[in-house]
Image 1: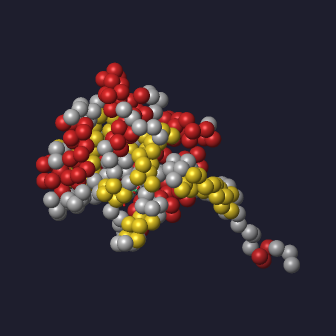
Image 2: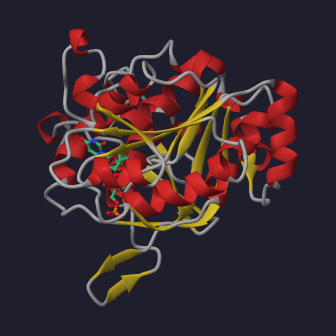
Image 3: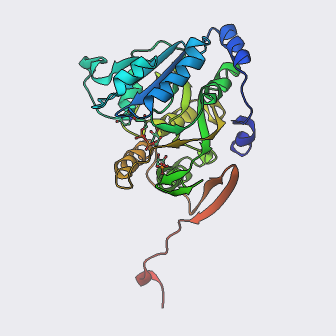
Length: 304
Ligand SMILES: O=c1ccn([C@@H]2O[C@H](COP(=O)(O)OP(=O)(O)O[C@H]3O[C@H](CO)[C@@H](O)[C@H](O)[C@H]3O)[C@@H](O)[C@H]2O)c(=O)[nH]1
Ligand SMILES: O=C(O)[C@H](O)COP(=O)(O)O
């Protein structure tokens, strides 16, 4: 089944809003779109504003547009509210449950202030994106009851000053997430962007899952939904190209720890195989690399 999953569950076509609105009405599905944000004043107005205009003002595709502000010290909350979002301060959501800092905490607590049957998440730091992200993420969920989680994927440029490597983004994806999946969940190797912050999930499934409070949130959802419901409950959609603001290499260190913890805590820690296949992607061209994990016995045990 994993062999054919990519062809069956990878969507590349554009989604027609009118058709999806019909599907949404026919299924009585309500959609909550959640944007976790900390200090994203430079970009949150564009992300919220364009989603609001297309899917709240001009259609009823998104029923709730929510920003969870995880403690910004800039104007993120004001700008997001002016652009059309309902803004919740993370610290004010169910304070009786305690407070942790992190993207996953905002995603987890967003479930407590939203009511949609489907939750869609979009990052607030996008610099290159478009509103088809939203129709793409929701399309498979609105048209196929067998789909529970949809991950976006895209080309990811790396932009540093004048340097623009069109496919050089996603350092944690390439060096942490893909290798971990190759070892612990090889059947998820063909998920093109396992760390995408743009994904959507059925509430009825997600509300039953544990949620890491930090950056492990996206990877954990992917693993847990496929563990619980099978790989076919996961779909992925081609969203074209996406750029965001990059964290420094050092700041990706704590993210790498959180990603590793999310996978290790869902795994038998022993490496059972001598060889694994690492799936990489150039665009949609798949590169499958066999990686040798075998170990030699101590030399002292080898007859000379
Ligand atoms: O404590 C935090 C940290 C971040 N964010 C927001 O979460 C989004 C993504 O965070 P960011 O720091 O930009 O993450 P990236 O470096 O872009 O990390 C990528 O990889 C992460 C780990 O998988 C994913 O969570 C991200 O969505 C994905 O874009 C942004 O809107 C942030 O403002 C919070 O709400 N709370
Ligand atoms: O998904 C990732 O690997 C992290 O978000 C880092 O991405 P970047 O290398 O494009 O900043």
